[in-house]
Length: 342
Image 1 (tube, one colour):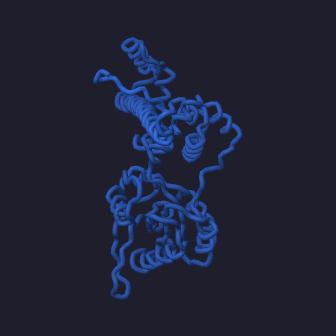
Image 2 (cartoon, helix red, strand yellow; image 1 turned 60 degrees about the vertical axis):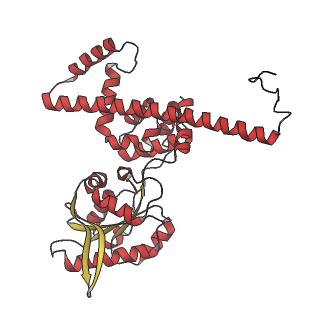
Image 3 (cartoon, helix red, strand yellow; image 1 turned 60 degrees about the horizontal axis):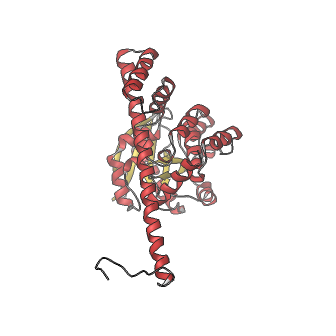
């Protein structure tokens, strides 16, 4: 027998268990490689389209160019890249709207990063609210909806409106202020810009949030002014430290923000209320309203939160947050389902 000849053994003559484990591992490697390629291709396309859209916005603002320049741009790009689709006038205008709607950091975070381009167009065309777009994007990615199924579900309004923070505002604030406070707080915040990834210690997450207050201000929305981070207060000769302190220009109230990496616990509301009392007594002026608290938790049980807030004298809202993309194998599977369903 020549050196390179191998015995003709088949899986039936080898250990069936060994062969099954081996072939399963090979299949898994092929599947993961394919999913990584899908993820990379989708991410590159979204990043390119956002960059083009942002460039259109910047040039139109800088030079006052109108829609005719986009038409000219379409002709030039199609002439230069005849083998590429996606440079029609209509699609370039979608790119402009895409960049106008989302920050670049958002298109690489879940769930937007998991959806192909034509899903992104459907979100822009059929929904006006940012919160609704995120809610439907999340459901489309999680369930592998095709574009047509996504549009159908939007038409049927199958996804409930974006959740709000669970709060006790109505019992503790004047009607106008309570409505404004409820509208100013989201039910879920996207903290993907922290690039924390996976499990992160609470102290590290707090430091990341404190170091990136500018991005957090964008996520908080209109009306918030930054006052301080890791704010130290002295109570009875003992020193305590609040995570973040803001002032809301429309409510004319200070807002204390505390971050927890775990599930909401009733004692978290008590701790936040303690900080709010300190701000009311040591920081706020007579012209300011009572301080508002925002507690950010990784998860929450609505009934537990409502019980915890029921008898408190401090206006507190409890919201959850998302740190970004799910594990690669889960993300890849979701994207593959979405692409396959198109």
